[in-house]
Length: 380
Ligand SMILES: [Ca+2]
Ligand SMILES: [Ca+2]
Ligand SMILES: [Ca+2]
Image 1: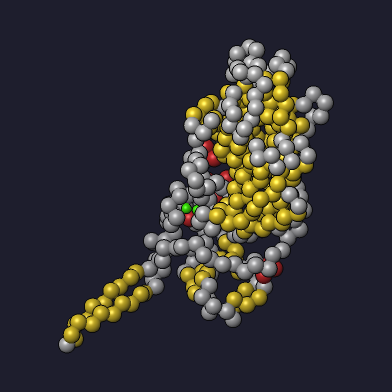
Image 2: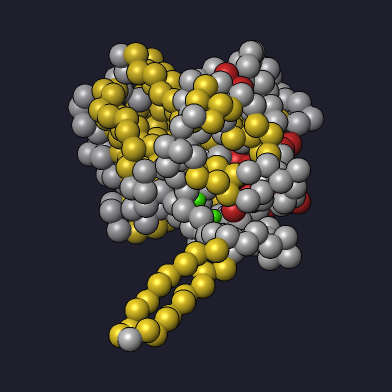
């Protein structure tokens, strides 16, 4: 487990009362005093939202994840450990550039202490198919429509990974050596925006991809393009019309597929129902219903069709990993949910105050540790 210390750097509204004392004595003398008066009637507020992103602080606390990254060649592994919670769990996204495709292996380990992987699945951006829409239904029909061009994802170069925007956003950039295919991955520690005008709120248990294809040379004048995506999952996979983000009110205009390998964990692959073509026009994305591979039962095919274009951008594609606590946090917003600050393995000293495992009420009074770090006094 990480040896990172808990750092509370999210801005918070103080509970209590600010009292301004103006004392006139000879001249005018002003004194400002701050009193800390935790008031159980005033706090917690189930709707308080300090960073004004539409996600209440209570939910932010429950979902907050620390981000660790490991780069090896052009592969990038992003580990996201739940920062708060009685038994922190781990989501890992491993971006693997293999010749001819771009894979994202997703793992979920319910216990950060062992990191034993309970469930994993993989998503492959496989190819851009160019096809003639023979039956004019706007979608690619693999049984009856043969591709006239199969543009496999070219070899990619890992460009960068780092914090961007509001510092809780981490971005990885890839581009093919011929400059035609670009993939940008976004992941956040908290709930928040991607910046750059991309829609929706990204959850801390998710990864978003922007795919951009430029200078694509079509073989025919009236063809369509389809992004061929392969999902490998031990669970059955089905189309969903309402994504989890839409259900939570944080997104709109999405479509997707969902795999639920266990009663408590689900994976989703969602995409916007519009793409940008030739830098200006938004056009509908028409998906072929998810198709199970006839030979390999754990493999599922998705084709996202868009009109003919020399350049298109699909932004963003989302992969959230949903565990039952995510839903519980969102549904109940339980103010008394225990929160750990200072993880067990991080036993040590914070400004002279030893913390081994401090299970605290989510809304206890706040304290400033000797080194300036802030936490909360257990209230129960
Ligand atoms: Ca918020
Ligand atoms: Ca068709
Ligand atoms: Ca936020």
